[in-house]
Image (cartoon, rainbow, N blue to C red; front, side, top):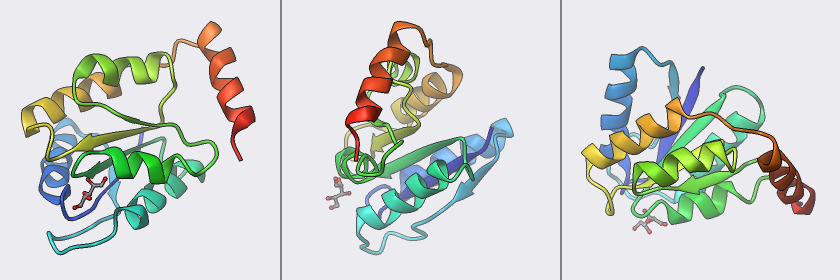
Length: 145
Ligand code: RB5
């Protein structure tokens, strides 16, 4: 499993902490930026990560901004992308089990690094349950542009 990870300036420090954890666990990733706390526009990084997932260069993506919201909105504009914001592990887990989320969005101004790591761990260890959830995901995809 390979991840694509991105952030804006607000999410930069938390992204670095998440990357350190991924390295520790031996999970491969591509860091698609940003590379400092200098102000940037979150859609640029949301699109990079979403494109990587859509192209199959990454299996899953992780995006970090101030709240997670802007990243999710921008990533979800791309068809085939299901980006979920989570601030606690239950929603993170269910976003994969029920919604087949392929991008996790975290808010660095909302959660501390401990909670963010819990969310990431819960999300990565969950898997899509299919069945009735597949039918619902298919309906979402059919409505997408
Ligand atoms: C940047 O100030 C902030 O707007 C951004 O990180 C994000 O929270 C947007 O959704």
